[in-house]
Image (cartoon, rainbow, N blue to C red; front, side, top):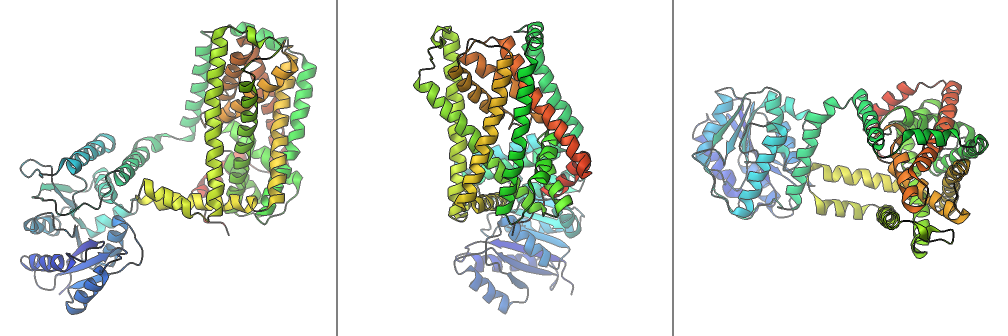
Length: 600
C-alpha cells in the first residue's frame, strides 16, 4: 500500500524516551490509519548519546520506522526539513518526542490535512478550553513571544511554537523556498508565511502537559527568536518599500530637515557671507593637496590586492577607487562601495570574493587610522585640560563643558572601534574558533552559524594582510598618509576663512573634527555622508574653539565640497576611461554581494 502519512520525530539526545515514543506513535497511527499507509522517521540531530543506536535498532526490526541520521547538529528546523524531504507521504506530520501533547489529538491533526484538505494545521496550548498549565518561567516568555509575532508579523494564531503540526506536502515545500530559519523559529516562520501566502491554516486546541526540562535556552534562544521576528518584520514590511528611490529620498529628506532645523539657530546669510569671503587661493591649494591623496589610495589598494594574490597597476586601481567613491556620492547606503568589486571584476577579472575582501580590509585600516588619529588628539587635548596658551581658557563655561562631553563621547566610540578591530585580529589568529564560540553563546538560531561564517571569512582576509608585517606596515603607513592629507585639506580650508586660532589649536581641533566627521559618514543615511560630515565637523569646532557657527559650518561645507568635487571629477574621468556605467555597476554588484562564496 502507498504511504500517505509520514510522521517525523525530531530527536536530540532522547535515549531515555525515544523507544517508548516510537511505540506510542505507531500504536496511535495504527488505530485510525490503514495498515501500510504510514511511516515514522526519527530525525536524529547529531546526538552524542545512544539515541542513534536505539533508533537504528528499531528501524532494523520494523519496516514502518526509518532512521534519518546526522553527524552534526542541523537545528530543529534543519533536521525536520531534511527528514521531510526523505519522507514518502503526502501528509507530513511532526511532534515533539516528549509527547507533551496528548496523543488523542493525533487523529484530528492528521485528518485535518489528509481528509479535510487544510494545508497547514497546528495544535495550540493557548486557545480557550485547553489553555496549558505552564510554569511562569516558560509560560510568560511563550505568551510574550506569541504576542510579538501577532503584533509585528500580523499572524492570527495564538500559539506558534507548539510542537504538534501537520502539512500538505506540496504546500510545505512551496513555503520552504522562502523559510530561512533552521532552528526553533522554523515553526513560527512556516506558519506566518503560510498565512501571508493564503494557504488554509487551522489551529485547534490541544491538551498539553510539560514533561522534563525544556531544551530551549530561555536567554539565548529567546533572544535568537526575537532577532528572527525583527528579520521577518524587516523582510515583510520594510524591505519591499526600501527601494533605491525611497532610500535616496529618505536620506535626502533627513539632510533637508537637518538644514531646516539649523536655520532656527543660525543665520545662513552669515554662513554664505563667510563662504564668499574665503580666500580662493587657499581653497585651490586645498584641492591640490587632496588630489595628491588619491594615488596613495590606489597604491594602498594595490598592496592589499597583492596580499590576496592579485597584482595590478596603481593607475587603474586609483581609477577604480575614484569610481566607487563617486558611486557613494550618487547612491545612498554606501552602495558605491560594492561598485569597486564590479570594476575590478569586469576590467581585470578579479573574482568578486577577492574584490569584496579587499574592500573589507581597506575599511579596517581606515577605521583604525581615523580612530587612532582622533584618539591621539583626544588624549592630547584631555591632558592639556582642553586649554591652550592661545586663550582657549577664555571660552564660556558652556562651550568648555560641551567640548568635554563631545570629546568623551568620541573617545568612547574610538575605544570601542579599536577594541572591536583588535578582537577581530585576535580571532583571526585563532582561526575563527573564538568567533563561533562567542556567537554561539549569544544565540543558537539559524543565523548564528551564518554570522560566524561571515565573520570568520572576513577575519581570515584581514589575517592575510596582518600576517605579513611588511605589508601591514606599508598599508598602515599609506593609510596614515591618506588621512593626514585629508586633514591638511581641511586645515587649508580653515586658513581660507582667516580664523584666529593658534597653529597648535588649529591642527589639534582640525585633526579631531575631520576624524569625527568621517566617522559620522560611516552611517549610511545620505549619499556621501553629506550633512552628517558637516554636522559633526561643525559641532566639534564650535565646542572646542571660539570659532562661531557661521564660520565653522561654512568651513565644513567648503571642505566637504572641495573633496566631493575632486572625487566626482576623478570618478567621471575614470568611468569614461574604463567605459563603466555607475548604474550598471551598482545593480550588478548588488546581485552578487549577498552570494559571495568563501575566498580561496
